[in-house]
Image (cartoon, rainbow, N blue to C red; front, side, top):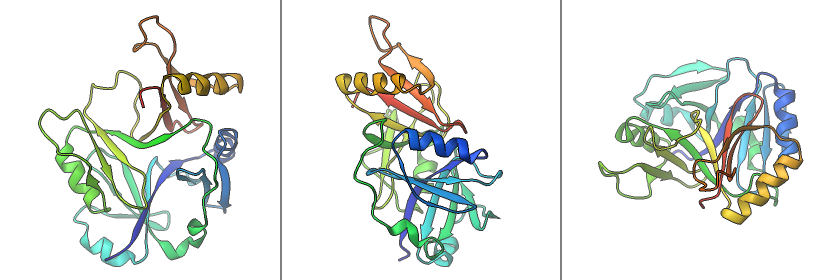
Length: 235
């Protein structure tokens, strides 16, 4: 069976601005060339792709790409030196040979980034079954039973960030596909928000909806290319 590993893929047409953002957030620059930069903390790797044609989504590295491509029944498009596919929600996934980037095998840093504890990527989806079937080809499985009443479902795999599918309308805030989700608890999130505010980080959205006193207790932060991170307190 082909072994794969899944990474967050963030577009960065102004990649120097994105580099500054991720450094300020506490990520470590592990590798950079003319096409990509890999930023990491102890929880994840984010591949920043510099091409103007890049879009937010996922990068999948396979130790043998041909069998994986042969097994996938979806439309495929060659782009940026890899093969592009898209999930039923329009989220892009780039497929590459792992041998092209051996630097990704290096050990991650020990520190968490300043946004806190990451619980994976989120995607708003109008069709759970089709989305689950798509990500099964990339090694993902649901962590619970899906029913007609399910408002969200988390998909998980080894060597890949968790993906949570949300039904439209249950997240009353800005949501671009995909986005990262951080949960820090009520007191922990206060400290994270205060730290980011003091550092001059611009908040994409300050959320008061869940607070009876109308206080900002959840925020959304965006990198320079509009890749969102939800920094929430209900974890």
